[in-house]
Image (tube, rainbow, N blue to C red; front, side, top):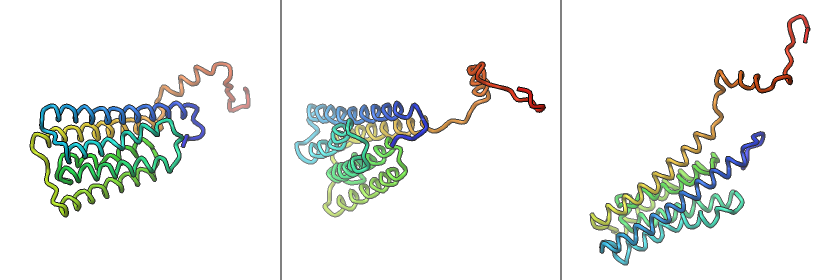
Amino acid sequence: MIPLGRPDAHAELERDEAVAAVWCALWLGATVLAGLLLAALGILPMGRGTAALTIGAAPALWSLMLASAPRHLWLQTSVILVGALGGTLASLLTGGVGGPLAAWCLGPLAAAIFMKEARLFALGGAAAIVAAALSGLGAATLHMRPPSPELAAGLGLLALTTVGGGLAAGLALLIRSRPREPRAGDLEARLAGNGLLLLDLTGTGVV
């Protein structure tokens, strides 16, 4: 939703969408590159590890597909829910909350921050908590063990950088969009720029 009364709101919205799209593209590209590199090193098996990377990249791909779509609430909600599902399954396949991809459970929260909607913040936070809980319970029930230390190190680095980068970028945009308090020089600059359009009315009624 574009706030009313702000002439630069549309440009700000386009900037936020561009940053979010770049984040998703980097997430997708980093996942593919990490998969190829780990496979070339011979430490990524063609089983749960490959499936986890594929599923974990799906939310980024879904977000990129919707990048040019209108900002409808149900589409934004689908981004958060797909992120929660992808994070849950990817984390579950690699050992749950004790595995290297547990950070991907925070993906829905990072996506919600870019949307700048209070209700979506709440949904993203709740989705992240549910994703972590389901991942932990599922891994304990199904006896999913973490991968080898070498593979866990690579996957953990991938998860932390992708989610951490998204959280940092989203929070930076959120802080930047807050209305800033006027500084002492702002009023003087506005007065100087208005010139003859300003009038001065004295206490005696003289203009």
